[in-house]
Image (cartoon, rainbow, N blue to C red; front, side):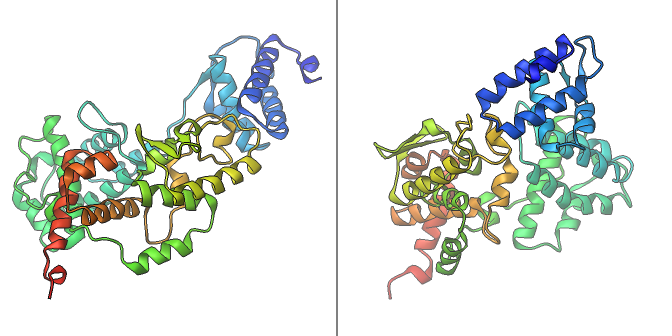
Length: 378
């Protein structure tokens, strides 16, 4: 019916493409209808197949249904007509915040944050949260140095020691990690002649001691996990020590319920009873909520159910429990395994698929706990 009302070849082609995507992605009738009307609004009057700006799509569709804008953009991208002229929110944030820094520092700090975000040949991409936290840690130091220095290259080891001197414990550790990241980047790019953080001690093992979660914390996690998504994410972290990214990228093909096996980040493991129960609970909820989705990822949301990609990093953040992160639960699982198996790093590497450096750090932490006075026999 709607195809008969298409009055241009371009709109007709876009509508047919939308129908194909709707069938492949499992869009609801309401979503598909929203896409049809949005395409008409965006393509009305167009005769050629030139690029359509993403900002234009968002502007024209927002009054009707902002959730349809990404689906309309998906159709236009499929047709090769979409041009993304927008700046991602995190990049806009980087530009704004580094623009507030004292003259002489902003450009180099911005370049550092962009590499943190995107990664390069020597650095893996970091999360938006990591970028924001690192900037928040170094900003007061830069503002302090700006009173007597005009550029990163002028910062000395003494300047670094002066700003770190009041800090203790985790605050100092986190500040050291952020400053090392900044100045190592600056040294590699030739922005500084020397690394003023090179002399700093307090590496991973010395900077903070890993301690297992207390019984109260474990009980709080059990009581606070009330949604199917929370129960599944916590089970994957607490039983399999799964990283948040591995949880997001888990697909239906990675689960073998009859054989009780699960593959996380390419590592095949036995599926325990707790994880199996959490999976069955979530899959039942998923099937009832999004019966027509074509997304093969285990975790889906209202938005990702319309496509094929994983849920966003923010999705897990929203399902995180107050005061206890999935990463903390994951680390606790590895440490408990180290305590139970005699702090064997090879065993930890094989069971949790972690590298030797991390396995040694957990093993050393477990040895320290096992040999501390509180653990010695009376």
